[in-house]
Length: 121
Image 1 (tube, rainbow, N blue to C red):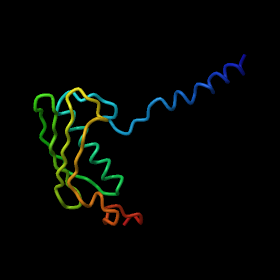
Image 2 (cartoon, rainbow, N blue to C red):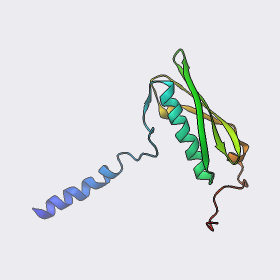
Image 3 (cartoon, rainbow, N blue to C red):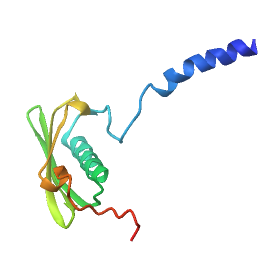
Image 4 (cartoon, rainbow, N blue to C red):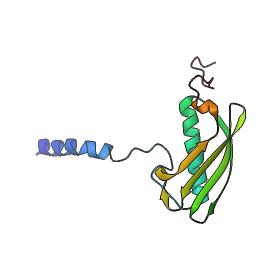
């Protein structure tokens, strides 16, 4: 009986662990208003910069809607510059359908000097 129970748990374990992996507070989230889009926009921009080794500071944003279209226009302080970030989405759409545009050539430059120092200095 114990072996049958252990086998049942072992068989179900992959299903439990692979159900959903979240990468941020707004993954798989329905966007109801511009405020939610602005929060999603911030977290997506920070995620993109942190993956490249940049530190981010001082997020400011305005947000709203035009009919059924949500927008968020913000700025994020990165490498000494205020970088424009804009996001759009249809109202009541999932976050995976939202669009983000970060106007920073350093973000796509593979040779950019980052803020991360592996030596810790």
